[in-house]
Amino acid sequence: MKKRVAILISGGGSNMVKLVESMQADHPAEPVLVLSNDPEAGGLKKAREMGIATAAVDHRDFKGDREAFERKLISVIDRNAPDILCLAGFMRILTPVFINHYAGRMLNIHPSLLPKYRGLHTHKRAIDAGDAEAGCTVHEVTAELDDGPILGQARVPVMPEDTPESLAARVLVQEHKLYPAVLKRFAEGNREPVFLS
Ligand code: GRF
Image 1 (cartoon, rainbow, N blue to C red):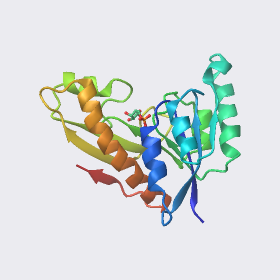
Image 2 (tube, rainbow, N blue to C red; image 1 turned 90 degrees about the horizontal axis):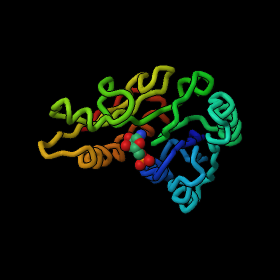
Image 3 (cartoon, protein in one colour; image 1 turned 30 degrees about the vertical axis):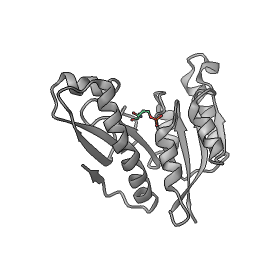
Image 4 (cartoon, helix red, strand yellow; image 1 turned 90 degrees about the vertical axis):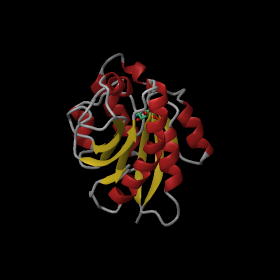
């Protein structure tokens, strides 16, 4: 039986597209849902064009009640009975209510070499710090923000003339390689980290 994968997005969903495209016939997983907290997210249209079921739960309808929002998310997601959740450009902070419900089977991709630069503006911070390298990390999601066991990392050089935008573009190329590689391994029950450089 293939592992059933739900992918959560907030925007364009470029990582989601790569994950869906990677789950071909002989792959141990299959995409069963793409969900966004923004009904206008561009990734929802891309998912529909790829024939994947989609849903949207607008966090603004819950007026700051994070737990009510997450209970609605869980009810919509679990209708598709996923085995694995992939957060892919999902920009809402999750509380233990949601994280505990999917403990041990929820992944996230973060655009830094964790544990460096948890949180936002990772590329600007790497440039401002004068780092020679940057990159991205896929990790299991735990209650600590951008923490949890590392399942994969990819490194890129930081160039002297880099802006946050040029560095983000270089890292994104690696994200699109790393996340599918980690998902395949994770779906096979293998938690050995993937390192790309
Ligand atoms: C990416 O930089 C990813 O690292 C972060 O969200 C950004 C946008 O991702 N999590 P996507 O294009 O929506 O997949």
